Image (cartoon, rainbow over all chains, first blue to last red; front, top):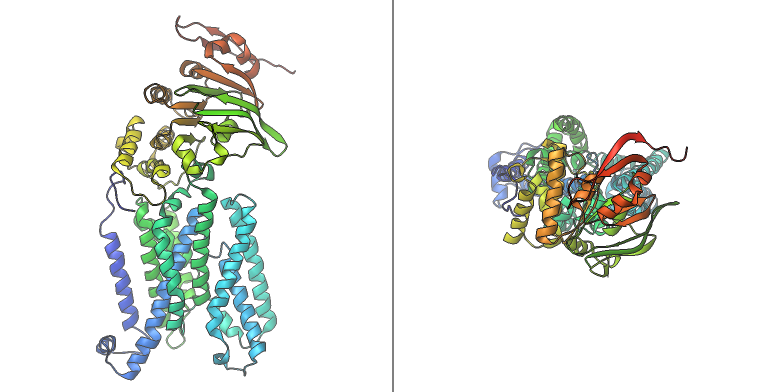
Length: 344
Length: 264
């Protein structure tokens, strides 16, 4: 991925440093700002190991794990969206296109439904439910849905159109079943599901961040290896194969990578809409014709967008915070429309 | 022999698109595939490139069956340019041509001086050096076609399969492409198979011509023999005659603007 002569022009050398600086800036803002007003001096003393117990618990046990979870999930959703948009050659692709979000929604619903009956908690004792397992349930469902759609599309030579059609059909069925279950169920547990479905970073702990970390690290580590196949998969299959690409194998590997990144992220934070869709467009817009920049810009923009959107959600609602999924949806639409207007 | 195929047949559902196609090429030979629309020219090229699984027979590069080779190994020996390939609009010519080096660099190896030289040569041969940083959407149809030819050249393969490389080009660039093909064959020993619609260009540039009709080969031989066979008028259902233009050159087909109604 190094710039070699023959690479077109010179990319703006400040683009990546600026993006990295913005990641840090949004991180700092998200740590210092919040519903509970903590004086900046207290925040600094907490970060340097001191501070009052209250400030310490808010910063270290609430804000930091939440920010970390959000950044990791943002990176994963954005990279998954970029891969999907590229290999399906569909600019509107995102993790819901391959059924990952819907599969995760269904398994999370089923999981909560069963645990309610098995554990039989009191009317409001959410804490007694094993919700620590919720991310795992969501991830398994997302991967399973992605797997089913892959197998269906495999029979059609993995044509991008087929995988899109299979994804929409299977996704719709899974979503309908999940909504049916929720509607017919009507228990107090619905609240947990609704919060999860809208995409939320509320009450995310270090456990959530640690659950995501291996996926994020593995995903970022394979990026240099999938870069060249990613470029070639922008072409039709005969062209990519003529250039020497093992189309079917590389398509499958990239689909698996995006499924794993999306499913683990959706399991933890719910299907935060528009991050997987809008961030890759934003990154492509910023990178312009410098394709090697698109991946790093997607990674940094994913972290920034989720961190800032969550901060807005935390501050906007006061004590009743607005879920991040609502913010990304509200902000995502105009951003997407503006970016698509620029497209030819 | 660089490229051969025997009894190559391709079936699309019930339709036999290619029926027992035979080909054997000498190194550096230019072979034109001609025939009416739907006669199987593109199918033959794709089967030779190993992009379609044949219903029967097989193609072989230097004696090795194409079906047993990896895509990368094939791409180092054979470059194939399909008809009107699609590419993302924001991709630049230089980026497109770089993809031609993929069979050499693979997934991991970085681009060496050797790869950069091949890219520069490919751009230069197609007259695109000064346009290298343009995106494909900024190009005219002819420039885009040359960019794709350039990407195929960057593969530095010994065999070049071109599917109608001169379509959408004005007469100047048509001649330029044919001249480039001729130079590659004579100076670098590149073996070329190209599907082409212009019969006179086929006759002028190729060493041998294969004539296809409804998936079957009707003729395989030198241009002059094709002129003598009377098959052109029959296969394309046109009236015309071959005119001698120079004593040492194959004749020129002069077509009348009237169609022969054969099965009426």
